[in-house]
Image (cartoon, rainbow, N blue to C red):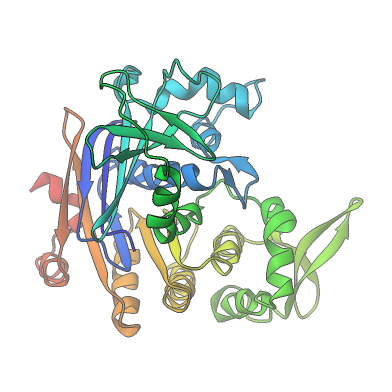
Length: 365
């Protein structure tokens, strides 16, 4: 489990450190506070271990560009990365490295994203910085790329360096490589091609149907592939008809989109961005109940951003029921890009609400 995250020079964040992370971590704050950037930092770090997003079948570094670009140009994903990647850098200062450090107890994974790297100009710019016992740092990429930053004298690379890194950090790298990002850009087509075949093989589809019956579609019976326009699409069987997933109400569709890939992953982190979108409070509770139960069963660490106090209270209640650790963090970004992060203990959230104060507006206090 990730115990702390440090981010530097990413998007609008000059620096941000979040510590004391637990099973369920909820982040609140005004727009632009750095909540989504924190999720993106973990997602970017995961690209070192697994460059391709298994749900979207897209390179992760390219996806972080595409998801912020609402207007799509004529360029493909790779061309977009080459043309627009500078937007990832704080104030577009591409001379600085983007640093993302994930701590797991006593171990730390130190990732560096560079815009300029003369030695390997065509290679992905994400490296794992590994300190040597003899001093100095080696930048390492799989399968066998090594680089010494030009500002330091090149150290000697031990013969067993690669083996020691891979074996010493094996569990942590597996955890990071399997990170799942759930956001509003997921589509039914993503599920149809890459998620639901695996769900059906394990009969985990029954979990999705039960969630829908709990709140969204009381007479839901099953989810199937239905021939439509010469292709097969996912559809929900109801008592009197069958409705394509893409034609469901927004709340039910989003619940299926988020819950389906969530049911497949284990022993990793799941990044959930603003799950309250299009959700009635009862539907939100059903979706969050599904997420937390899956997280407890499959050893998942949840990172959730939200603008909804209903969600905060729902998740706090569910976490207590399931005996899961939960922290609520208030994030506030200063004019210099430095993000202040405050942990709101359970009693703090309760007291603030009893006083009639909304924790989302702490920046005004």
